[in-house]
Length: 213
Image (cartoon, rainbow, N blue to C red; front, top):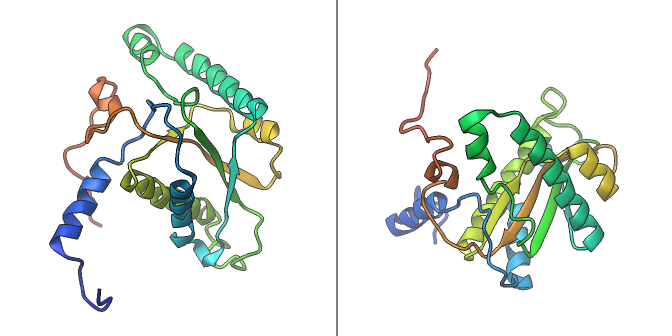
C-alpha cells in the first residue's frame, strides 16, 4: 500500500468500524487456552502506541502464580462487596446480578502499570501535564484491546479493585501507578451492544455532545 495515499480502502474502513463496534469489555470467557504466539503478537501492538515524549511508560506484570491470582481475586471480591453496599433497593439488586470480572475463568491475566518515574522521554510533554504518561498507557491498552479482538480474543478491564492493595500483593515499585487489571481469553459470545446496556444498567448516548467556544 502507498502510505502517501490519503485514506485506506473502503473495505478496510468498514472492517475497522466493525472491529471497534465488537471490541466490548468481556467478563464471560471460555476455558480454551490462549495461543502464546497470538498473545505475544497482540502485546506487540503496545509498542506501536504513541507515548508522551516517547517515554513508553507502560509496565506489564503477567499474573500466573496461584498466590498472585488468589490475592487479586480476593481484592476484587472485597471491593465488589463494598461497592454493592453503596447501592440500595433496585440499584443494589441490579448491581448484584452484574458479572464484573472474568478472573475465575480467564486463562491470561495482566496488571498494566504506568512508570511515573521513568527518565525515558526526558519529561517532554509530561513536565506540564504529568498525567500524559498515564494517558499514553491507556492508549497502548486500547491498541492491545483491538488487536486481541481482531484475533478472536476478548479483554476484560477489572476496575473494581483496591489498587494500593494490589500493588502491595504484586510488590511493584512505589512509582508505578496501576492503570488496569486485565483478563484475556476467548469470549463466550460477541456482541455490538455493551453488556451493561443489555442488562439495563445504563444506556449509551445516541449522539456525541460537542460544545463550541
